[in-house]
Length: 115
Length: 115
Image (tube, rainbow over all chains, first blue to last red; front, side, top):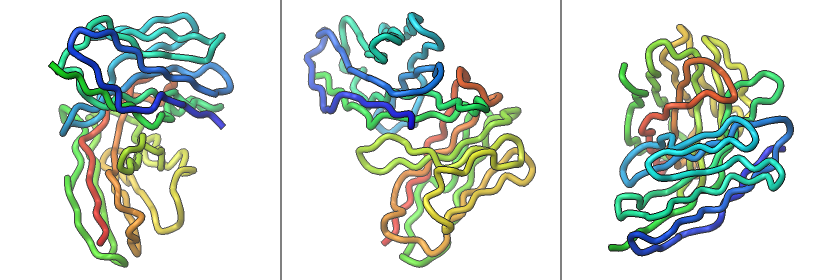
């Protein structure tokens, strides 16, 4: 079945460092790919998405490119801030034959940014 | 409403008891999803509603779990004969329509603790 694998955390960085969180997926068909973020004490919220191969999603300085050839959707940011400390989840839409919009999530990667 | 509302935010119960968790989606959203998130894990799909009907309940772990959405808006997740392993955060999400590219908006979750 469809699945998502993320790099294990926690990832600890100093402020202004470059961030990469790896995400690879297994899927049939043409899923959409998402990054969701969960800040401390808050609910899951969408960070960015890409709906087809070679699309780049971007938001708040974060970027991820849908790479069909490597089945990857790695999250990057050029300069992290303390306020980026959160848990990041990679997800794909398991549309199946009915396009339900159901999401399959990775296990999450905790990012800690130190001043 | 402005967002997805879930009640209660916290529920502590004893093993063997019955529990109901409520989700009030964004007004006009036809698709509603329930997920379960255990500590340190990504959300796991439980059930998806399109309107009043459960279009996909493949994620419900066993017959102790049941969910309804009688009028196509508010949904209730029901857990019978709770077990300690049911302890988790139960997340509800809604979207305007079921689509692989559509964004799910999540509620803050209901944290269930079974003693």
